[in-house]
Length: 301
Image (cartoon, rainbow, N blue to C red; front, side, top):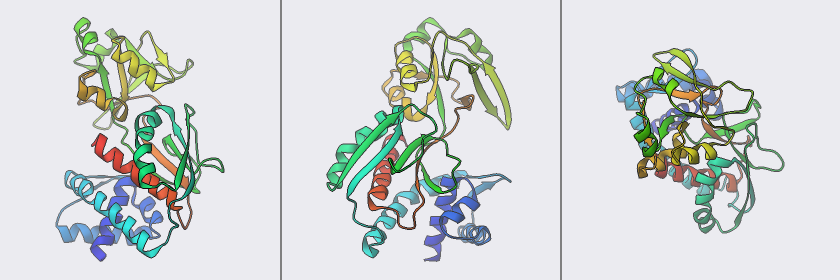
């Protein structure tokens, strides 16, 4: 049981990015959590996490371990919850507030199978382009970019913040793909943001940040608009992996500068499901989060 608890803690640390946050979510002190992690690494005789003063990230071995144990941990949690009846059976109306692009691509497709698995739950899904969304009396779950400031909320990370720089094959027939960051100045870059914001993409390499001022014929506050424009051959777009992975796999978009970590200035965060922190998480909320996570693991990994 000690090893299982340590693996559960390790998975939570990877998901939350810090030992202290993972410890709080499991009702542990940071000291106790750190000790358990050290014992697990000593037991396995391998380093699982890279540690800095601000956050931790999995080593290559840690990432492999995380990917293998998370499905088993989720299955075990679901089984134990059902057996102990710590949460009520999933039922009632589940109100979900989600960013439009992510909702259309990854929430809506899960609804038929979710309803089949949980016929006593009906879903009220509201999609929005608003960034600062959070759960309220009108929403059980908010699926959003980045984390809100409220400390009373709990959360589950759904995606990474990886971006893909891409364009259609027809665009690259007219204009050679960029080989360096400096080449971006000669490309029609499709940008995300508001009118008053500068068009800047950020590169982070070996701890160094570089702001790249780009320009193009289209700016929009909708990722869906930029995706479609890129598919139509209008220009080069920097979009979340969760949005364009299928297009790249199907050949509708081609990527470039794959070894560069790039993101639009101010929009480099991950997608999170945020919900109220309750001692007893409603069964409908837990069922939906687990169902959505399984979908994402199948379609994005």
